Length: 316
Image (cartoon, rainbow, N blue to C red):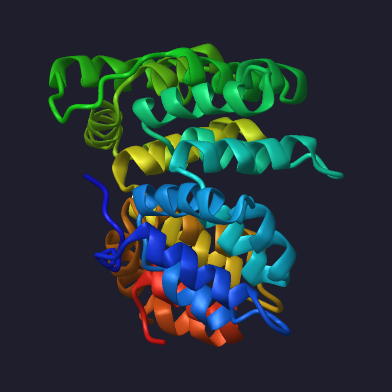
């Protein structure tokens, strides 16, 4: 079961609601108190706090947070409050209906989620926005990228660790025939295998491919495909082999160079805090020789920094 990086505090939702109400009162809000409470509550607790707040003050906590906070702290806290499926649905919706359509964000979310997470995401998307996620993707994506996303959204994949090694080898051979062995690429084979196989199976396919052809499947995807289709395949493959590595790299990219991509930084920290943040931290440290909390600390400031570090389980 996924847990918060920092274990949730054993408090009463009613008491939390009272403390939050106090933090909003007076001149300017006490954002430190808000961070201190919300960053240390798990999804179930956050849901109960919202219920209690509404019951006690006949006011919507999300609306109140939205009006009291600002900037990146506001973005991070508002994204943290919903349950994971509702949050993913909101992220994709914003990416697909914003001033600039960002299909890359939708690709990241869809292709890095497990089949059960996708099941709940689709349900939440329809419940919140009254439209089917597949319909939106069908309208906004194109070509092989669209085919892959739609196949990935609609195929029920096994989530267990067992693998049929003979079948994995067959898939590796099929990918070789569809890619390196021929002139041009048979994209439909890549779509079928990448969208239809479990993570454990796909990792075994990659291992089998390397064993048979002395080449990494990731390299093959890069040389045989391109653009958004390539990005989606690589996301699926990397998350099959090591999801924490995928997100560690995403965090590194969000913070490297001039200026920080705060939207991406917030998205990854908030969506992974209750899933695999400990593994992401270990991957980050091993790949970039620096603690993730140090990197975040140097790229952020104020209560926004305090909030992200609390979710990461870093220094305050």
